[in-house]
Length: 293
Image (tube, rainbow, N blue to C red):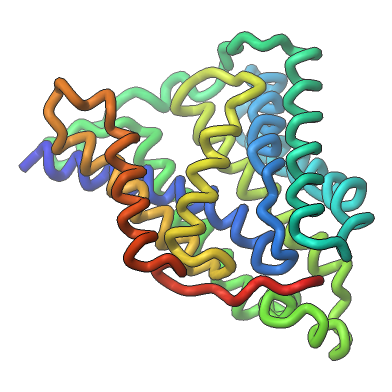
């Protein structure tokens, strides 16, 4: 029973983190029809910000990382994506790949390719005992933080003027523009929010691993895209659902597989993902058909 409770907490924690990553990707896709391959580099830039500020108090580290990553995301939108916004999706994707490659190699030149230890959150991996179950602090913090952010994002999209405009732009960007929605501001706000989500993800990942490197955003990017696709690309609720499903699959298979094949867990996970897409190629919550912006 204790092992079951621990697996449930781990699955909820990992699923919420995956949901957070998928939301950052799905938010941009919903409005711009862009799978932002440079989203992983926002996580990487946030990780290096944590490295630089690692000896400061944690509120300073978290707040400065969030602000700096939001600024990075806004600059990325203004410099790289706004000039090609009217292009077809292939051009947008190639642009995002170029930005990703540029930032990753720039980080390698400046910081080197080796992992760097971070003096932040060392105590977060220590376990706490809840109901006779030993759980790392970082898992509880990840679950709480991600659920709070998911709740705040849902309220923002449903209750605020800007959030309603973002939802309208996601439904039909051209019609929203005709009705007076300032598209530039809406898209810029979407990138800022994705930067906040990327910064939060980076802080939680650094708290778990204690290291940063130029490729630290690659795996979260892949996970986020997969989660958004199986949930329903273009639907934020689908992205969150896909993240939780992928997290539960990962932890569930880790617990269920024999030790002799435990190292092949990810192969089994993505086999299940293929099975899900064979049955429901549109995802759990189907999104809208692609459109030009």
